[in-house]
Length: 309
Image (cartoon, rainbow, N blue to C red):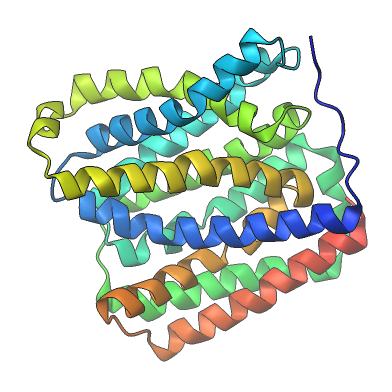
Protein backbone atom coordinates (compact mmCIF):
# COMPACT_ATOMS: atom_id res chain seq x y z
CA UNK A 1 0.00 0.00 0.00
CA UNK A 2 1.40 3.35 -1.04
CA UNK A 3 2.10 5.87 1.69
CA UNK A 4 2.24 9.62 1.08
CA UNK A 5 5.86 10.73 1.30
CA UNK A 6 6.87 13.95 3.04
CA UNK A 7 7.04 16.89 0.69
CA UNK A 8 10.46 17.44 -0.87
CA UNK A 9 9.54 20.79 -2.41
CA UNK A 10 11.73 23.76 -1.45
CA UNK A 11 10.60 25.63 1.66
CA UNK A 12 10.01 28.82 -0.34
CA UNK A 13 7.71 26.96 -2.73
CA UNK A 14 5.76 25.40 0.14
CA UNK A 15 5.36 28.84 1.75
CA UNK A 16 4.14 30.21 -1.57
CA UNK A 17 1.55 27.46 -1.86
CA UNK A 18 0.49 28.05 1.75
CA UNK A 19 0.11 31.80 1.17
CA UNK A 20 -1.97 31.24 -1.97
CA UNK A 21 -4.17 28.76 -0.09
CA UNK A 22 -4.59 31.37 2.68
CA UNK A 23 -5.82 33.99 0.22
CA UNK A 24 -8.23 31.62 -1.51
CA UNK A 25 -9.75 30.36 1.75
CA UNK A 26 -10.23 33.90 3.06
CA UNK A 27 -11.90 35.10 -0.15
CA UNK A 28 -14.09 31.99 -0.40
CA UNK A 29 -15.26 31.84 3.19
CA UNK A 30 -15.85 35.59 3.31
CA UNK A 31 -18.57 35.08 0.69
CA UNK A 32 -20.27 32.12 2.36
CA UNK A 33 -22.57 34.09 4.75
CA UNK A 34 -23.95 35.90 1.70
CA UNK A 35 -24.68 32.57 -0.02
CA UNK A 36 -26.21 31.03 3.09
CA UNK A 37 -28.43 34.03 3.78
CA UNK A 38 -29.65 33.89 0.17
CA UNK A 39 -30.60 30.22 0.58
CA UNK A 40 -32.81 30.99 3.60
CA UNK A 41 -35.45 32.27 1.17
CA UNK A 42 -35.76 28.84 -0.46
CA UNK A 43 -34.73 26.10 2.00
CA UNK A 44 -34.30 25.40 5.70
CA UNK A 45 -30.84 24.97 7.22
CA UNK A 46 -31.04 21.17 7.55
CA UNK A 47 -31.80 20.82 3.84
CA UNK A 48 -29.14 23.31 2.75
CA UNK A 49 -26.54 21.38 4.76
CA UNK A 50 -27.60 18.05 3.26
CA UNK A 51 -27.69 19.29 -0.34
CA UNK A 52 -24.43 21.26 -0.26
CA UNK A 53 -22.44 18.48 1.39
CA UNK A 54 -23.87 15.86 -0.96
CA UNK A 55 -22.57 17.92 -3.88
CA UNK A 56 -19.19 18.32 -2.19
CA UNK A 57 -18.76 14.63 -1.42
CA UNK A 58 -19.68 13.69 -4.99
CA UNK A 59 -16.84 15.89 -6.21
CA UNK A 60 -14.18 14.02 -4.18
CA UNK A 61 -15.72 10.53 -4.16
CA UNK A 62 -14.27 9.43 -7.54
CA UNK A 63 -10.84 10.59 -6.40
CA UNK A 64 -11.16 8.61 -3.17
CA UNK A 65 -12.44 5.48 -4.93
CA UNK A 66 -9.59 5.67 -7.45
CA UNK A 67 -7.04 5.73 -4.63
CA UNK A 68 -8.77 2.86 -2.83
CA UNK A 69 -8.75 0.79 -6.03
CA UNK A 70 -5.05 1.34 -6.65
CA UNK A 71 -4.08 0.89 -2.99
CA UNK A 72 -2.99 4.50 -2.64
CA UNK A 73 -4.47 5.27 0.77
CA UNK A 74 -2.08 5.77 3.66
CA UNK A 75 -2.74 3.31 6.50
CA UNK A 76 -5.23 4.33 9.15
CA UNK A 77 -6.80 7.25 7.30
CA UNK A 78 -10.37 6.10 7.99
CA UNK A 79 -9.55 5.58 11.68
CA UNK A 80 -7.74 8.92 11.99
CA UNK A 81 -10.63 10.79 10.36
CA UNK A 82 -13.26 9.81 12.96
CA UNK A 83 -12.59 12.49 15.57
CA UNK A 84 -12.07 15.35 13.06
CA UNK A 85 -15.28 14.24 11.30
CA UNK A 86 -17.29 14.48 14.54
CA UNK A 87 -15.91 17.96 15.27
CA UNK A 88 -16.57 18.99 11.68
CA UNK A 89 -20.15 17.71 11.82
CA UNK A 90 -20.95 19.66 14.99
CA UNK A 91 -19.47 22.88 13.61
CA UNK A 92 -21.26 22.52 10.27
CA UNK A 93 -24.68 21.92 11.85
CA UNK A 94 -24.34 25.05 14.01
CA UNK A 95 -22.99 27.12 11.10
CA UNK A 96 -25.65 25.92 8.66
CA UNK A 97 -28.48 26.89 11.02
CA UNK A 98 -27.00 30.25 12.06
CA UNK A 99 -28.16 32.38 9.06
CA UNK A 100 -31.77 31.72 10.09
CA UNK A 101 -31.14 33.54 13.39
CA UNK A 102 -28.48 36.08 12.35
CA UNK A 103 -27.87 38.59 9.60
CA UNK A 104 -25.10 37.66 7.21
CA UNK A 105 -23.21 40.85 8.07
CA UNK A 106 -22.53 39.72 11.64
CA UNK A 107 -22.19 35.95 11.25
CA UNK A 108 -18.43 35.97 10.94
CA UNK A 109 -18.02 38.55 13.72
CA UNK A 110 -19.37 36.23 16.40
CA UNK A 111 -18.26 33.12 14.54
CA UNK A 112 -14.67 34.31 14.77
CA UNK A 113 -14.79 33.21 18.42
CA UNK A 114 -13.20 30.17 16.77
CA UNK A 115 -9.84 31.76 17.47
CA UNK A 116 -10.33 31.80 21.22
CA UNK A 117 -11.39 28.14 21.23
CA UNK A 118 -8.49 27.35 18.90
CA UNK A 119 -5.98 28.69 21.42
CA UNK A 120 -7.45 26.51 24.16
CA UNK A 121 -7.67 23.32 22.10
CA UNK A 122 -4.33 23.91 20.39
CA UNK A 123 -2.40 24.37 23.60
CA UNK A 124 -4.10 21.32 25.13
CA UNK A 125 -3.57 18.91 22.23
CA UNK A 126 -0.58 20.11 20.17
CA UNK A 127 2.80 20.31 21.86
CA UNK A 128 4.41 22.28 19.05
CA UNK A 129 1.84 25.07 19.37
CA UNK A 130 2.84 25.70 23.00
CA UNK A 131 6.04 27.34 21.81
CA UNK A 132 3.92 30.40 21.02
CA UNK A 133 3.04 30.95 24.68
CA UNK A 134 6.34 32.69 25.49
CA UNK A 135 6.20 35.07 22.52
CA UNK A 136 4.97 38.59 23.42
CA UNK A 137 4.22 39.30 19.78
CA UNK A 138 1.86 36.30 19.77
CA UNK A 139 -0.15 37.73 22.66
CA UNK A 140 -0.13 41.12 20.95
CA UNK A 141 -1.66 39.38 17.96
CA UNK A 142 -4.24 37.67 20.20
CA UNK A 143 -5.22 40.99 21.76
CA UNK A 144 -5.37 42.59 18.32
CA UNK A 145 -7.68 39.93 16.91
CA UNK A 146 -10.06 40.22 19.85
CA UNK A 147 -10.04 44.03 19.69
CA UNK A 148 -10.47 44.06 15.92
CA UNK A 149 -13.44 41.69 15.96
CA UNK A 150 -15.07 43.63 18.82
CA UNK A 151 -14.63 46.92 16.94
CA UNK A 152 -16.14 45.47 13.77
CA UNK A 153 -19.05 43.93 15.68
CA UNK A 154 -19.84 47.11 17.61
CA UNK A 155 -19.45 49.18 14.49
CA UNK A 156 -21.99 47.06 12.64
CA UNK A 157 -24.36 46.22 15.50
CA UNK A 158 -26.88 48.83 14.51
CA UNK A 159 -27.07 47.42 10.98
CA UNK A 160 -27.27 43.72 11.81
CA UNK A 161 -29.64 41.46 13.70
CA UNK A 162 -29.10 38.45 15.91
CA UNK A 163 -30.84 36.57 18.73
CA UNK A 164 -29.79 34.61 21.81
CA UNK A 165 -30.14 31.36 19.88
CA UNK A 166 -28.25 32.91 16.99
CA UNK A 167 -25.35 33.82 19.27
CA UNK A 168 -25.31 30.32 20.78
CA UNK A 169 -25.26 28.73 17.32
CA UNK A 170 -22.34 30.90 16.24
CA UNK A 171 -20.42 30.17 19.43
CA UNK A 172 -21.11 26.48 18.87
CA UNK A 173 -19.84 26.79 15.32
CA UNK A 174 -16.72 28.53 16.65
CA UNK A 175 -16.04 25.70 19.10
CA UNK A 176 -16.74 23.09 16.43
CA UNK A 177 -14.45 24.66 13.81
CA UNK A 178 -11.68 25.16 16.38
CA UNK A 179 -11.74 21.53 17.49
CA UNK A 180 -11.93 20.53 13.81
CA UNK A 181 -8.82 22.52 12.91
CA UNK A 182 -6.80 21.19 15.83
CA UNK A 183 -7.81 17.56 15.30
CA UNK A 184 -7.07 17.81 11.57
CA UNK A 185 -3.55 18.93 12.49
CA UNK A 186 -3.19 16.20 15.14
CA UNK A 187 -4.69 13.22 13.31
CA UNK A 188 -4.59 13.99 9.58
CA UNK A 189 -1.20 15.66 9.19
CA UNK A 190 0.42 12.59 7.60
CA UNK A 191 -2.34 12.12 5.02
CA UNK A 192 -2.87 13.94 1.72
CA UNK A 193 -5.18 16.95 2.08
CA UNK A 194 -7.61 15.90 -0.67
CA UNK A 195 -7.92 12.36 0.65
CA UNK A 196 -8.29 13.63 4.20
CA UNK A 197 -11.29 15.78 3.38
CA UNK A 198 -12.77 13.13 1.07
CA UNK A 199 -12.84 10.66 3.98
CA UNK A 200 -14.07 13.22 6.53
CA UNK A 201 -16.89 14.37 4.23
CA UNK A 202 -17.79 10.72 3.57
CA UNK A 203 -18.34 10.34 7.31
CA UNK A 204 -20.27 13.62 7.59
CA UNK A 205 -22.71 13.36 4.68
CA UNK A 206 -24.80 10.39 5.93
CA UNK A 207 -25.41 12.20 9.23
CA UNK A 208 -26.29 15.47 7.48
CA UNK A 209 -28.67 13.69 5.11
CA UNK A 210 -30.33 11.89 8.03
CA UNK A 211 -30.87 15.26 9.75
CA UNK A 212 -32.25 16.68 6.51
CA UNK A 213 -34.87 13.94 6.19
CA UNK A 214 -35.72 14.00 9.91
CA UNK A 215 -35.84 17.74 10.58
CA UNK A 216 -35.85 19.50 7.21
CA UNK A 217 -38.51 20.28 4.64
CA UNK A 218 -36.56 18.44 1.97
CA UNK A 219 -39.52 18.27 -0.43
CA UNK A 220 -38.88 21.92 -1.24
CA UNK A 221 -35.86 20.80 -3.26
CA UNK A 222 -38.19 19.88 -6.12
CA UNK A 223 -39.39 23.49 -6.40
CA UNK A 224 -35.99 25.15 -6.50
CA UNK A 225 -35.41 27.41 -9.52
CA UNK A 226 -32.51 26.45 -11.74
CA UNK A 227 -30.36 29.50 -10.82
CA UNK A 228 -30.63 28.58 -7.14
CA UNK A 229 -29.33 25.09 -7.94
CA UNK A 230 -26.41 26.79 -9.64
CA UNK A 231 -25.64 28.89 -6.56
CA UNK A 232 -25.96 25.83 -4.33
CA UNK A 233 -23.51 23.96 -6.53
CA UNK A 234 -21.07 26.86 -6.69
CA UNK A 235 -21.13 27.38 -2.92
CA UNK A 236 -20.66 23.65 -2.31
CA UNK A 237 -17.72 23.29 -4.69
CA UNK A 238 -15.90 26.46 -3.63
CA UNK A 239 -16.94 26.84 0.01
CA UNK A 240 -16.79 23.16 0.99
CA UNK A 241 -15.04 20.85 -1.48
CA UNK A 242 -12.19 23.21 -2.38
CA UNK A 243 -11.96 25.48 0.68
CA UNK A 244 -11.62 22.62 3.17
CA UNK A 245 -8.81 21.02 1.18
CA UNK A 246 -7.05 24.38 1.02
CA UNK A 247 -7.66 24.75 4.76
CA UNK A 248 -5.75 21.51 5.36
CA UNK A 249 -2.83 22.88 3.34
CA UNK A 250 -2.86 26.06 5.43
CA UNK A 251 -3.05 24.15 8.73
CA UNK A 252 -0.15 21.88 7.76
CA UNK A 253 1.98 24.86 6.71
CA UNK A 254 1.21 27.37 9.48
CA UNK A 255 -0.50 25.43 12.29
CA UNK A 256 -4.13 25.80 13.42
CA UNK A 257 -3.75 28.67 15.91
CA UNK A 258 -1.93 31.15 13.70
CA UNK A 259 -4.01 30.07 10.70
CA UNK A 260 -7.24 30.87 12.50
CA UNK A 261 -5.77 34.13 13.75
CA UNK A 262 -5.18 35.27 10.18
CA UNK A 263 -8.71 34.14 9.33
CA UNK A 264 -9.88 37.00 11.56
CA UNK A 265 -9.64 38.98 8.32
CA UNK A 266 -12.68 37.13 6.99
CA UNK A 267 -15.33 39.37 8.67
CA UNK A 268 -13.58 42.39 7.20
CA UNK A 269 -13.65 40.82 3.73
CA UNK A 270 -17.33 39.93 4.15
CA UNK A 271 -18.22 43.53 4.90
CA UNK A 272 -16.15 44.71 1.92
CA UNK A 273 -17.97 42.21 -0.30
CA UNK A 274 -21.34 43.40 1.01
CA UNK A 275 -20.33 46.97 0.17
CA UNK A 276 -19.24 46.07 -3.37
CA UNK A 277 -22.26 43.86 -4.11
CA UNK A 278 -25.08 45.51 -2.18
CA UNK A 279 -23.85 49.02 -1.46
CA UNK A 280 -23.68 48.47 2.32
CA UNK A 281 -21.30 51.01 3.86
CA UNK A 282 -18.80 50.28 6.60
CA UNK A 283 -18.74 52.52 9.64
CA UNK A 284 -15.57 54.20 10.86
CA UNK A 285 -15.36 51.71 13.73
CA UNK A 286 -15.58 48.80 11.29
CA UNK A 287 -12.75 50.23 9.20
CA UNK A 288 -10.68 50.62 12.37
CA UNK A 289 -11.42 47.02 13.34
CA UNK A 290 -10.38 45.81 9.91
CA UNK A 291 -7.07 47.64 10.07
CA UNK A 292 -6.42 46.25 13.56
CA UNK A 293 -7.12 42.75 12.21
CA UNK A 294 -4.59 43.19 9.43
CA UNK A 295 -1.93 44.24 11.94
CA UNK A 296 -2.86 41.38 14.29
CA UNK A 297 -2.63 38.83 11.50
CA UNK A 298 0.85 40.06 10.65
CA UNK A 299 1.89 39.80 14.31
CA UNK A 300 0.65 36.20 14.48
CA UNK A 301 2.61 35.22 11.41
CA UNK A 302 5.76 36.81 12.87
CA UNK A 303 5.21 34.89 16.11
CA UNK A 304 4.86 31.66 14.16
CA UNK A 305 8.09 32.29 12.27
CA UNK A 306 10.02 33.26 15.41
CA UNK A 307 8.84 30.20 17.34
CA UNK A 308 9.90 27.82 14.58
CA UNK A 309 6.78 25.70 15.24
